[in-house]
Image (cartoon, rainbow, N blue to C red):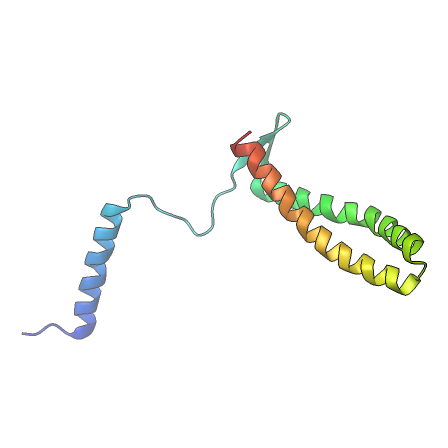
Length: 112
């Protein structure tokens, strides 16, 4: 008696899974458990660290935006150009700082 195609497919998938599990026994979870980080004697999770990085980046931007506007205005003498440059710089530098903070935390926890 022939095997139905869907049952044959299921048998093949099961065999492939067994072979894969035997070859690669480490299980990977899609949602990882929080990894504790030790910083200055205190333990944080990765999520805590990301939140801290975001807060730090945005608070610094609140300080740096007026500084950027004033500086570009002093150089250009034009408020409209100063505002445009400040918006562009804020977006670029905020993104750059966030990824720099992530790289820094990675280097501190893994290589330094």
